[in-house]
Length: 192
View 1 (spheres, one colour):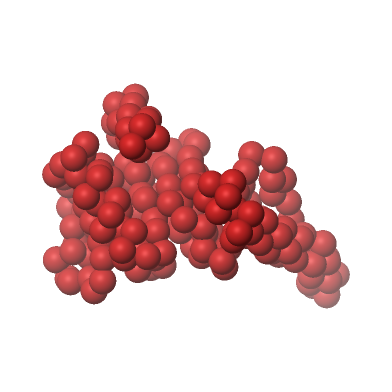
View 2 (view 1 turned 60 degrees about the horizontal axis):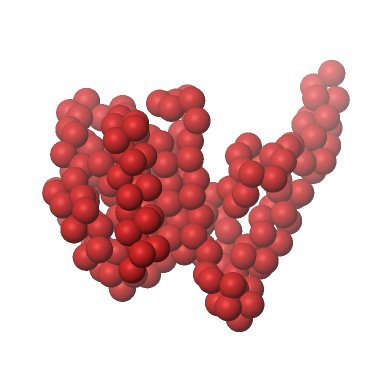
């Protein structure tokens, strides 16, 4: 209970310090979203928008008005969007400057997709974007190995395709990969 209060107070502090920076919280599981919604509603009330299951046209419009910086009819009804991966593709959520991955999927490409909702090419809103990842406790980590597996998969992605951001920890070094550099060099040489 104390840890939950601490996390909620940090989130409150973040929203108070940068009121224009909205927050997206992702979980893979609808049950987890339901649990988090109950806890977060106590602190954030009607500033929390929760997405589970099917998306109605009205819900899509609400998300776009509140979280898409390019939407012409912007609203400021919500500060936090809590959702499953239902919205991890196909949405521009760049009015948010923070992504919280409450759980880390086995496929790290889904983390990249989640972060891609706020890291939009040519639609920059914030100079810095914050990515917060929750991992299981030490006991859970020993059992699941989720962090190790996710980091190993991300390492393979970084080395094969390159990256432009740090997704799991501050020690990551985003670089272009040799594969892409080699392909670019070949294309450049072909044009000459």
